Amino acid sequence: MSNKKAPGNPASKKKAPANPLVQEKKRRITPGIVIVAVVVLAIIAAVGVDYWRKNSSVELTTNGRTEPAVITGPGTTGEGIKVGKDSAKTNIDLFLDFRCPHCADFEEETGPMLDELVADGTVTVTYWPMGFVNKEASPRLANAFAAAAAKGKGLTYAGEIYGDFTKAWTDDQLIALGKKLGIDDANFEAEIKDNSYQGWLDSIAKVSNERKVEGTPTVFVNNEMLKSDQLTVDGIRSAVAGIS
Image (cartoon, rainbow, N blue to C red; front, side):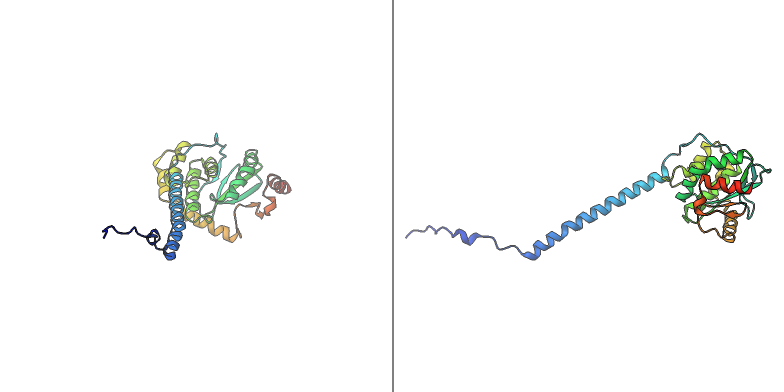
């Protein structure tokens, strides 16, 4: 009798059918991994952007701006920063916020015209910096603007802040901007780091409430609030001409 074993039946070596529950688990893992990867990449990108906003170098975007005489400087309770010539018969009050994109647009459109009206003695302009668009950044920028205005560089400083919304404008960046504009002293740095004008800014906020300022920019011409459709070069010129 032969001792050789009969060859096995190939059909008997087939793999057991796959467990459908295991396959379902595998299918479900892949989308989760993708989502996690996307979230991680988004976090890394956000951290990178935030780092750049806080650490990017400060470069001037303009050749400067004519700085008019300061009639009322920052720090006087309940009074804005008034510039121009005392002989002007018309005053324009401008309530603004340095984190307000509409204020930046308004500045770009009407700034040269306001500078012209101030220079020729037609108007004085009183600047009232607000701090409500961004509760963290707006007050800091308003304080820095006040510190720069006290050094006779307020309008140029404001234009540079408006000119770069991508920056976080940290204290270091605000101090660097001052140095670029020729403000390089310990008092200026201290005023920014210590938020020295906060009490004055609180008094500005109180005035804005009394005058029913509900948004920025808000403009008054001799105490008459202009409507939103008047916040243009032609609108302001017409309002000023109507008073003169």
